[in-house]
Length: 297
Image 1 (cartoon, rainbow, N blue to C red):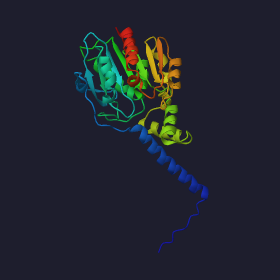
Image 2: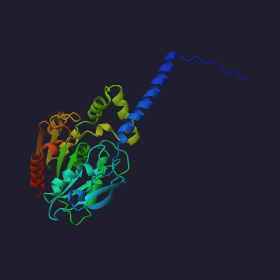
Image 3: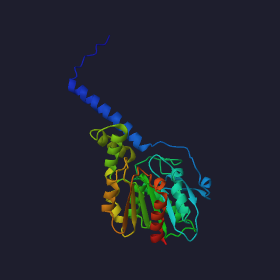
Image 4: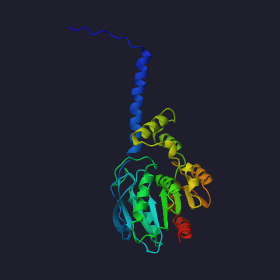
């Protein structure tokens, strides 16, 4: 029989090992929540809202096959790309598409990476700009799209994609950002507190570090407030709910301060996250359509 010598491990080493193991488990699990949002079945097609449409596919600039709808308006009209939020899909933003289509705009909606019918990993808006760039590239192949009249309306995470994407893509001529967030870290911190009752330290830094590692991106470069100033002199309109619990209105105020002219800010009274179109439909339609009409005609 072989005698295995006993090794006396100091108690602090055991505690340290446990902490490291628990940190890895927590970080991996938390990053998985960020990188793999829930997927929902396709609920609504544009035809159910009396809009003709085409099923389209195109590649993001890093090669992800992206699925979308192109809803034609008038050939002489501008084209608006409408971008959905985290954990939703292209069907969830058809009410925005319907509003714009009613005013003869062409509309393109699609599923971001890791959402709807599109594969990939979510990065809360940073690498999703490659999906937006792919969408603009796709519009460039269509003869019924005026390349000098392309705008973007982004919702929640989609608002961040619109801001970051438009900062360096001058093919995008006007941006409406509805309920976007100014800071990646502050938003993750807010969600950790709101949905999981967790403090920032030590949980949020660990979750973000693992997310960066797994998705190969830098969270410090995902802050929309750092990019919005680069959109000028192209126009930007910032919308947010005055009672938004997920993305507090301070985010919209920070974005507005960082933006260059021309810019507009509308904090919608008594409105929570992305409720403005539902609760203030007439005002929302008037303001957003007037914005695009003014800058894209």
